[in-house]
Amino acid sequence: MATPNYPKIILLKGNGGITINNEMMELFTITTSHGMVGLPLKSLHAPRVYIVHSLERFWEIHKEIKAKPCCFIYSYEKLDNEDIKLIHANELKEIA
Image 1 (cartoon, rainbow, N blue to C red):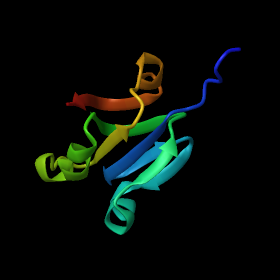
Image 2: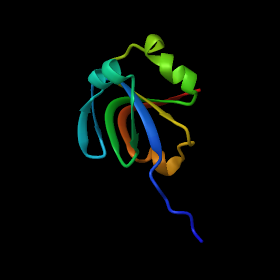
Image 3: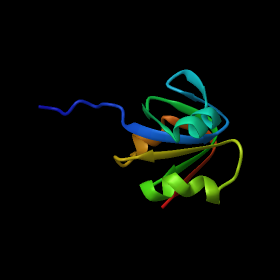
């Protein structure tokens, strides 16, 4: 039996506007109010995206990278090439 291909859940935080799963969202408001938001990754459009591989670093990365606008992503499951193709950004970097 084949395993269903569900979208991976990602944690998002940062500053600036993004479009996630065809919904516009302001990350600064969510980050300051709730710390982060978790959503399924179906599509993401943002000017600058950092994929952070360590949860501990994800919580502190905003102190290190102060670029604006900026979207930080963490996923408990490894994002594969098909997942990365769902992320549309002018600048996309991965951080260990």
